[in-house]
Length: 154
Image (cartoon, rainbow, N blue to C red; front, side, top):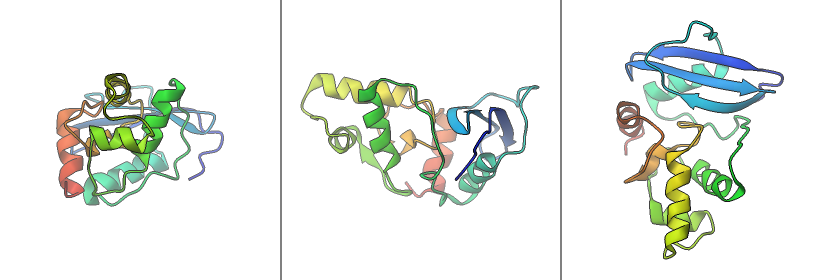
């Protein structure tokens, strides 16, 4: 999905989660997703990514792998988040399995800590679906995570 040139903050409230989803873009790339209680006054409400998030909250079948993202995280964490992005809709993973998918050793305490840190600090929840990892930690808030897991059949 091309969002060439898009920069700014976009947000919309969703009844399904009882709060807003805020998406930040820079240079056409999605750089942040958060869940404020209400739409910030300076946010615009019309954006195709917000439309797709709404569709996903309703049906649980939307993929976001074509959304251009801009990750500003360390390389090791990026590898974890890229592996997370590959988890298909409706499929969950353990932290250990995600560790292996990222090419790390799930028997190494430092590698497991790297994975849990990447999940906890995930800048793009929903698009990088930490809600699909069993046992977390999560950047996605509880009610949002519960809704996403329900609509995806997890």
